[in-house]
Image (cartoon, rainbow, N blue to C red; front, side):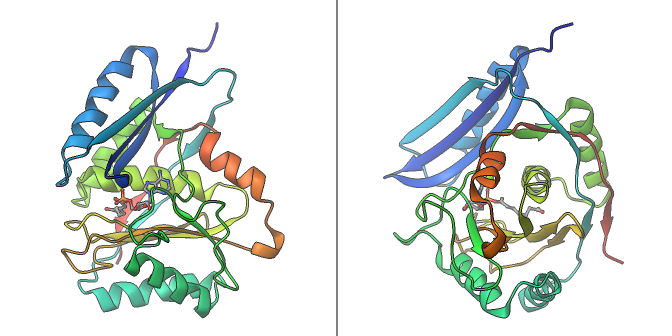
Length: 262
Ligand code: WAQ
Ligand code: MG
């Protein structure tokens, strides 16, 4: 039997060369056009009207597919920003990330981490000791791509998240992305919160702790956010990390637990 061809489908929308939104999916041939439709709808649904939408459909020939189980998700019920940020900081410290690096990361996400002032399309890679940024392009960042839920896992994670009232597409997408990132060579942990002004949630994720979700990492109305991948800069082998994040296809075929923090 030949394995069916897999397609990577990526969308990015921008206005006046500023990033507005993006998404990435994997698909078999039959569903490519449906997914392109979905991503177009998404690109047009953000507040700002994009003046450019780029959708790339690419066959992944010969790439071997890694199958992963999604990280266990624990949702915090903390209801104010100070509590959420404190819990997030404590968790990052527990991984051995320095206070200096943690403050640098929070500052970048608060300010908009792109040198030109806005959000980045991709993520920062940050040395866990010094807080130095190591991604090759500080304006763009590293865009994680080529990951998705299998059909079966997609239905199952929808049901698991719905049981704890997490029904927004952002949670499901972020959990998939964080799962791929947690398995990348050299990553200690990820810090993220959304740049969408109506969406205040964020998370810390690592292979050891799973995906720890905090409902309010910033005030409503703030359109700044981003992602930081913490690494040990002195031991980092950058090329395998960048190549895994951007190019290696990962399909999430089984689902970890999803619980509210006790
Ligand atoms: N690869 C790397 N970085 C990315 C990617 C990607 N594929 N997509 C987004 N980013 C970066 C980019 O800098 C964005 O500005 C930033 O992350 C935030 O992106 O309910 O929705 O799409 O548990 O706004 C987290 C909480 C939501 C979800 C994250 O991110 C939940 C979110 P957004
Ligand atoms: Mg996004």
